[in-house]
Amino acid sequence: MNIRSILAVTDFSKQADWALERAAQLAVEHRATLKLMFAPANGNAPPADGASRLAHTARALSTRLAITVRTANQTANTLHHVAEEAACADLLVLGYQRESALATFLRGQTAERLARLCRCPVLVTKLAPKGRYGRILVAVDFTPESRNMVKLACVLDADAEVELFHAISTLNEARLRCAEASAQAVKAYRQECLRYARHRILALTDSFDSRRNRVMSKVSHGDPARQAAIQQEYVGADLLVVGKRRRLPFMTFFLGSVSQRVLYWATSDVLIVPHDAQASTRVAAIQRMEAEMGDAKGAFRRLKGRPTRAALALK
Image (cartoon, rainbow, N blue to C red; front, side, top):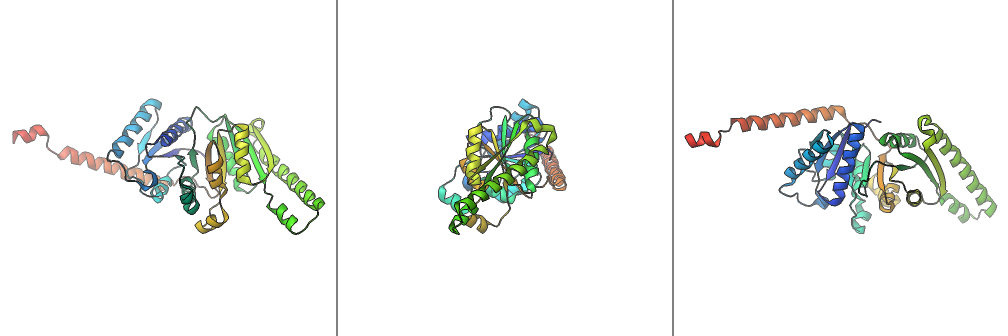
């Protein structure tokens, strides 16, 4: 997956500034186009000077980093507006906002809901960027989509160390104990799961020949989300990559979401990769750019047709 276009969402908070800085760094590294979009936090009304502040931020980033920075025409009043804009992006970047426990329980976190609406990966920044990512931890589950997650981690920062991590759920062990299986049978099942996981993660690691010396692996036991967050903090990873299955909201409500819990527990940035992630819709992107150019030309014509103050004074 090539990163050619990045959409960064801001509400002018400190966390959003971190997201803009990280998005700008990635745009420089990948020579990608950066687009800024204003989305007020928690559905608040946008400030009157929101558009001008966004344009000023875009000009400042473009001048400082010598990259192409555009701004979205519309303000995102809902998450669907952000998802619509993200259809033309290869990566969506936003800052982490801690929400109330009740809102998170009922609706899920904003970033997690966006990952459900978008078809592009969602990068959630939780820390102020201090440079490029040095170490990336990828939580894999051996589905076919895991390979794409590892590829994206390798593409995101070509110089970062990448570690693949898999946590073996102990749920089936608990079921065996409930069925009054012997301790020997439970131990044998645990050893077989560990042997299988090590074989699969080794095969996944060896498939990336160009980075074999910098792709490590680790297998653990326990809740996948909790163990991934513990491993991320233990190895000091700057970024934790996790997959996202597309489920109906009521299924996520009752069954829970690994990505949602990882967002809460992780102390690093988190990259949520939808299992059905797709490249940006280039046709939609071209149409939107043409529409934006048309709006700009129309505004210029209207401005050009207005009489100047000097002309009005002569009348």
